[in-house]
Length: 295
Image 1 (cartoon, rainbow, N blue to C red):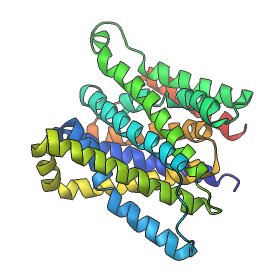
Image 2: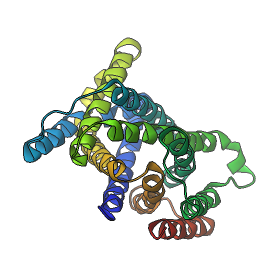
Image 3: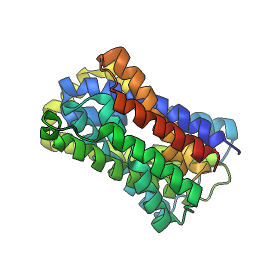
C-alpha cells in the first residue's frame, strides 16, 4: 500500500487535534470525566455509519470474532479511556499545545510495547527517528526554573498519558491484525466499532452509578458534543486504517505532526504563543519524521 498509511496518519492527527481542542472546551462545563465520554458516546453513531458504509460498499460478510481479537480490543479500549482522561486533566492546568507535546512521548512506549507484545521490528533508522522526535518533544516541554517547576504534576500526567495511549495503540493494532479478514478496511472498521461499544458501556455505567448529573449535562450539551464526536470518530477511523497497514511505532511517530496542528489551533483559538525553545523542539520533530519516512 506504499505510503497510504502515512496519509491516514496525517488525517488522523489533524482530526485528533481538532477533537482535543473541542473536548478541552467541554471540560469547563462537563468536567474531565464528562468531556472524556464525549468522544465515545457521540463518536459511536458516526463509527456505526462508517462501518455500515464499508460493509455495503465492499459486500464483505461480517468477520468471525475471536476471543483473542476481543482481548486485544478490550485492552485498547480501556487504556484509551484512562489516557484521554489523563490528557484532559493535564490540559486544564497547562497549555493545550504543551500537553499535546508531552503526550507525544508515546512513540517510545509504542516501540517497546510493539516489540514485546506484537513482534513489530525496531530497526536502527526507526529507533533513531523515534529518539530524535522524542528529544524534540522533551525540549519543548522541559520545565523552566521557578514557577514552571511548581506545575510539575500536569507535566508528569501528560507524559504518563503518552505511555497509556501507547498501550492503547498496541491493543487496537493487535485487534486489527488478529481479525481474520482479507480486507484491511473491514478489519479496521469492525475493531473501531467494537472498541467504542466497550467504551460507551463502561463510561455510561460509571456515570450512571457515580455521576448522574454529569451524564445529564452531557446530553444537554449535545450540540458541541456532536462536533467533538464526529471528529473523534473520523480520527479513530483513520488511526485504525493506518494500524492495519503499518506498525504502531511508525504510525505513532508520524503522528507527531499533530504538534503542528495543535500549534495552529493554540494560536488561533487559545491565543497561546510559541517560545523559541519550543520552535527548536518542533524542528527536531520534523527531522525525526523525515527520517522515519525515509527509513
